[in-house]
Image (cartoon, rainbow, N blue to C red; front, side, top):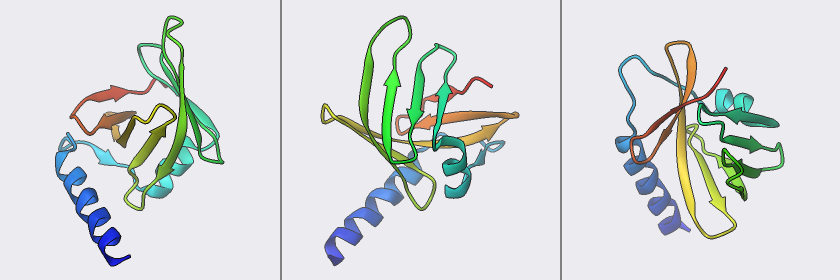
Amino acid sequence: MRLIFLLTLCATSAFADGWAVRETDKVLDRQAVIALLEGSALTFFDDGQSKFSAGGAYSYTYANGGGTAFGAYEVGEDGTVCIAFRNGFGRCDRYVESAGRVVMLTENGERFPVRP
């Protein structure tokens, strides 16, 4: 059990160092992320849409009829949102407020603004 905790702690610390957070970004905490996501859908500027159910189910519908990917999500203590897709793929994201809008940050340093 202790080993799992340490591995989780190390992984969380590694992710925290890699996010492309700008000086002007306000990182959303766990409560703000839960309020933003649960039971809602976020639409991005490419018309892709992430849907988060209160029970932890997740789906992403690609723009232009590109299909839908399904999985489950979990919000970590630091507000990081990790998604495990049914196909075995997974990722973690952070959400920030930047210049009055919500922006999703990926582990790879990409930034995806959410449409109002």
